[in-house]
Length: 609
Image (tube, rainbow, N blue to C red; front, side):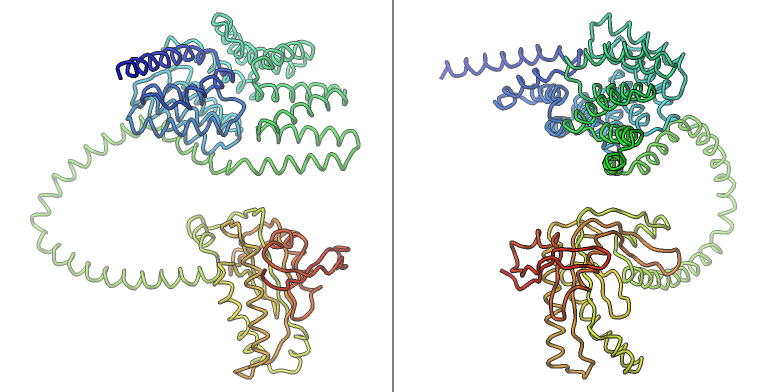
C-alpha cells in the first residue's frame, strides 16, 4: 500500500515537471510536436484541476493541425476555469477560442470570445491579457475591412502593452498594426512599426514573428512598386513559416506572390502561386484564405481567356464569401461596443451633472408634492383605471395582429419583420419543394359559377393546409388551382424530404377519397403532384401585403416534376429520390423531357417500404 502511494506521488511530480517544461514553449509560438506529446498526458486523467487547466491551455494553443480539436480543448478550459473561478485561465480559454474561430472565419464567435477575455483578464488583473485581447479584436476588424475600429483597437493594445515587460506581445501588436496601416496606404508608419517589431523578434529569437515581419515588409515594398525587394522578403518569410508549419501565413503570402506576378503579367507563375495558396487553405479549413485564393484564380483565368475555369473559381469564391457568417451583424455589434468604450468617460461626466440636477429637482418637487399629493392620488387612481382598460384593449388587438401576421409568414420571419421592419433573404442548402395541380381545372372553371369554383378549391386547399401543418412543413402560396409548399425552412431539418413524401401521399389519398365519397357534392378533381429537393433562397416580397416566397432552380424543377406527372401520381426528381429511396418504393420512369430543362430522370413514388 505504501509503495502504491509513493508511486502515485512521484508520478504527479513527473507530470507537473513535464507541464512546466512544455509551458516554456508557449512564449515562442505554436508547436504541433508539443501538442502531440501533451495528448499522452491528457489521456492519463491523473491531474488535479490546476495542472489540467495548464495542460488544456498548452494543448489548445499548440494544436495547429486540427482546429476543431483545438476548440474542444479551449471549451473544456473555459468550463473548468468557470467552475474553479480562475479568471486567468478563463481569459486564456476565451482567447484561444477567439483565435481558432478567427482562423476558420467565424468572426462573430471570435469577437464575442475576445470581449469576454477582456473581462476575465481585468478580473484577474492581468494587464498583458487585456492588451492582447484588444489586439485580437483589432485583428478581426482588420480582416472585416473596418479600418477605423481596427486602428482604434490597435492603438489601445500598443499603449497597454508598452507598460508591460512582455516584449513579444508588444512586437505582435506592432506587427499587426503595421499590417493595418499598410492596407490603409500609410506606408511610412507601417514600416516603422514593422522595423520596431522585427528588432524585438530578433532579440527574442522568435522565428514566426521574424517571418511575418519579413512578409509584411515585402507586401509594403510591393505596394510601393519595389517588386524585387518584395519577392525577396516574402520568399524568406515563406521559407521560415514552412518549417514552423504556419499554414495561414504561408497561404496568405503565396497569394501575395501571385498578385505580384499577376501585375507583372507573368500569368503562369501567378497561377502556380494562387493554386498553392488555395490548396493549403482548403486542406487547413481556412475559409477567408479559400475565398481570396478563389477570387485570384478567377481573375487569372479570366485574363487568360479561360471563361469556364474563371466562372468555376468565382462560384467557389461566392460560396466561401457567403459562408463567413453574418459579417454585417458582427460589425454592427462591434461598432456599438466601440462607441460605448469611446464615450465611456463622457457618459460618466454627464451622469454626475445629471445627478446634481436631479437632486435639486427632487428637493423642490418634494415641497410641492406635499400640497398636491391628495389631488394627485385621486387623479392617478382614475388614470390607472383608464390605462388598465386601455391596455386590455391594446393587448387584445396586439394578439389579434400577431395571429394574423403568423398566418401569413413563418414565425421566425414575422419576428424579424416586427423587430427590424424588413426581412433579409436567406439561403437554405437543402429544401424539398412540392407543387400540386388539378387536372382539367380550366375546363371546370368555364362551366362553374365563380362562387361554386372557389368553394370547391377551398374545400381541397383547407385540407391540404391541415396536412402540411401536421408534418411541420411550410405553405408558400396558392395560385389558381396550384398549391405550393416546402420543407426544411425557415428552420433547417434533416427529414424534410421524408415528411414531404408522407404529406404528398396523404394529399393524394384525400383527393381520391373525396372523389369516391364527395360528401358535400363538390366538384371532383384529379390531382398531379411534383417534388424536388435542393437549395433555395427565401424571403419576403414587397413592402405592402407581405408574402413569404422562395426562389431558385430547385423551385423551377419542382414545377417541372408536377407538370410532367400524371393524375393520381407523385412524380419526384433524381435529387429527392437519392434521399428517400431507402424509405419508399419508387418506379423509375426513365429520362423525360422537361420544358426548358431537357431530359431529366424522374420517379413515381409507389409506397412506403
